[in-house]
Image (cartoon, rainbow, N blue to C red; front, side, top):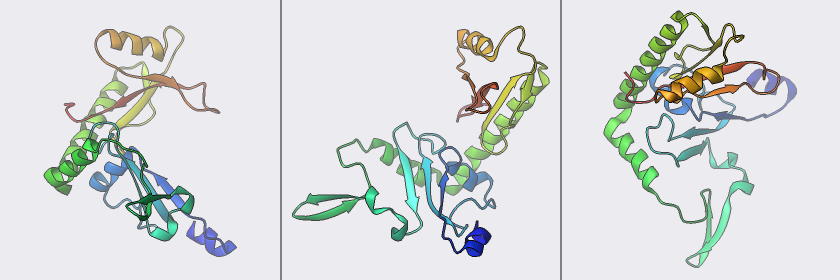
Length: 199
């Protein structure tokens, strides 16, 4: 992108949607350059409720600098007698998820997140390898980038991934089955998201 921008006299910025990987990559892939170390990255979002280890309801968006935050995303509220520009929800919401995230940052620190994410990656890799050895499944990812992996049936003529999902649900496991987006919608997969507490 840097070379393209330079060659064409452009300044195309990049946004990184790190919803799942934003709390994984910094801890288990610290040398991976996906963030503000890349000159064209101007904004990043991450979900605290995925691998940030808090309950649903908190997400983060950060910008490289104020100049990169589009003005149309800023709310101007007349509060306490003056203009208060803010990039947040402009109505009341409970703050417990933010407090939970802050608590985890303080309690776990970098070393705690690294330990947890490394364990999750290891468990995902081991589970993926075991699924691959079962025979009827083909891995589409192996859980080493983020602690998530997907697989499909090698032969779906006798039963489908939806049948597998239904049988697992009857045994207390929720393993979503779905088709891929347009242009790959003929591919149906099962997806495993390894969360803290799996062993």
